[in-house]
Amino acid sequence: MLPKTLLLPLLLTATTAALPHHGHDSDPAQQPLPPGPSTTTTTGTTTELQPATAVLHDGFWGPPGNICSAKTLQIFKSTTSSHPLSTMLKFQYPSAKYCWLDFEAPAVPAGTGREVDVFLQWAPVDTCPSEGNRRDAQVGRLEIPAGGGRAVWRAVYKEYLTSSRFPCPAAGKVEGIELVGVGDNEDIRWTQGKGKGVRILYGN
Image 1 (tube, rainbow, N blue to C red):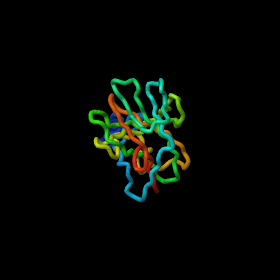
Image 2 (image 1 turned 45 degrees about the vertical axis):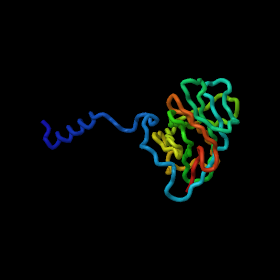
Image 3 (image 1 turned 30 degrees about the vertical axis):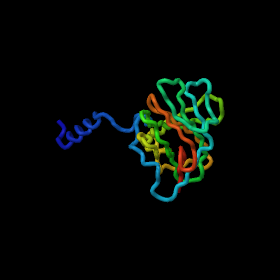
Image 4 (image 1 turned 90 degrees about the vertical axis):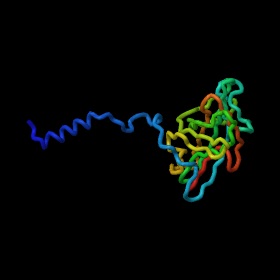
């Protein structure tokens, strides 16, 4: 029989090895990060970058296809319509230390959803009537206040674009982003302009 001084460590080792593993080996896309910070930074100064282009995508994949000339941008879903709309934006990054996405949103009609899923695109879409949206990884989900205002992250799957502490991509990089409605009924409409709409905030 082994001495007690050797038996106890062996038992502890065996017990630890039998415990289930709860590490970070599962798919990170299915493991939301803690709620992100508000899309503001508390140090230094920030500057906004408006999108270079904005295109509406008709999820029906039929006429009218993508819409490049819309004066009002829109995220739309309805149980009575077969033409959901998402908004696709193209940004070209400046030279900056940190960059993050911000949505200064309009008031949303009562009785409709206020959540927006944010996806990267594997390449921006800025031509029409091409019907593709080139959707890639989801970075998170934003919620718009009932009366409008700055949307907040309710779920984040990547720090990229969701955190004011994440490094900005190399200057000149072009990025496509798609905003998609959540739920069955949603109608969010806005116009881009200084201090409003979807923009990239950046600073050093």
